[in-house]
Figure 1 (spheres, rainbow, N blue to C red):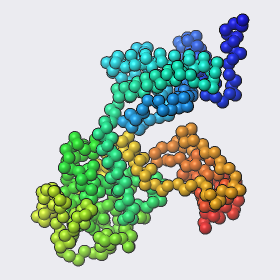
Figure 2 (cartoon, helix red, strand yellow):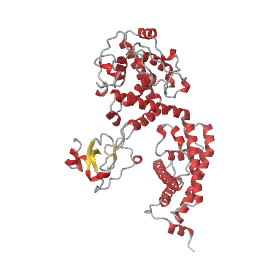
Figure 3 (tube, helix red, strand yellow):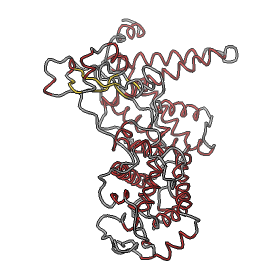
Figure 4 (cartoon, helix red, strand yellow):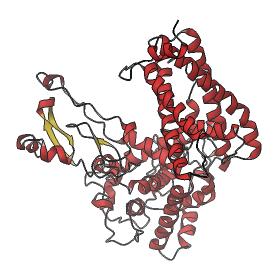
Length: 510
């Protein structure tokens, strides 16, 4: 009878075997070999080699976990533990190698090292870390044996161990991250969803009035990071007063993003209610600019050349191009009430929605005059509003950067133009097979300039080669008839200059 070691060697899978268990066998073998090298090395005698081996261990463990994740998706797709809790995490924690970080944290906790957590939290997490690592070792052992015997099947005991490991990993991940940062409550998640709706409505209104253009949104203009929150404050206080910026709520009932500014938002709302339609338009146009410009100067340039409302703007915005001849200008609250309200055009009193309190929803003429009298001029009042609104919006970028990035990321996904289908049925006959796209998750930087991708520097696939580029390195559009693309689509500079004939290029200008 052959020795056990020889039998294992004869039954080991080939490196070319595409099955996941075969890939897992060699990934696990790599981790075991690196760990053995670290254990046999004296870190004090050769610290540089020790750091090299640690980096190799980190990469090999990440590869092992990636294969294990694919095995669980193939083996127990309907029995996976829910990952809905990930929506509670700050966006900066949701990285591709979060699982590897969790494994490293569990090893540190089991060794008695409390990284970034309090000692009491570490003592509470240590049993979970021990259970997780024991489950991982058991899974590795079972999958190794399975890869040597039947690498194409997953018996029920293997499935049960994978389900247990997946549950322990999810529980430890939630507990560990909760001990590091403040995770969002379900109520806060719902409130931020309301803010997303408000921001989307704000963008649609800005597009309708000509403050923004669809090209700015599709190009992810950096200034929109500031413009959209500024305009949303006005929309939330004037146009949708019962929405997420409702000041009838207490600060505790508002989203944590806006609750610190509750008192300041009240003062902003009171001032906004006394503005005329022309003054409100002038303020909003100034909020769309990059610089802190005087919102009352007649020569204030429109934001990006697109802040002036269209000439055919619907009423009441068509009045903005005609100087107000009446001595008492209509206040913006007479025009900007919620849908369904009847405007009283003869006075500057704001119509009240049913069930509202007159003291909260109406700005009497005496109160309006009293508020205006606090400022030396209309220019001074508009400047104060500009500074306050910009200050609130800009502090969101500083104090709630992660929440605001997540909100704006969702808003851009909703309001950006949808990509055209890659091929049309009528043009697909006789066309070559489309190039395989590089997955977004495998590319963190532009294939040409190597600039890292961020929320503002987005990924763009070249329809000709399938690689990922930034907007600057893929600014061209051309038809690709050999792929069945008769309409101009995005292509990178290299493909546009090197591979495309002059005929497809001319399609861009037609």
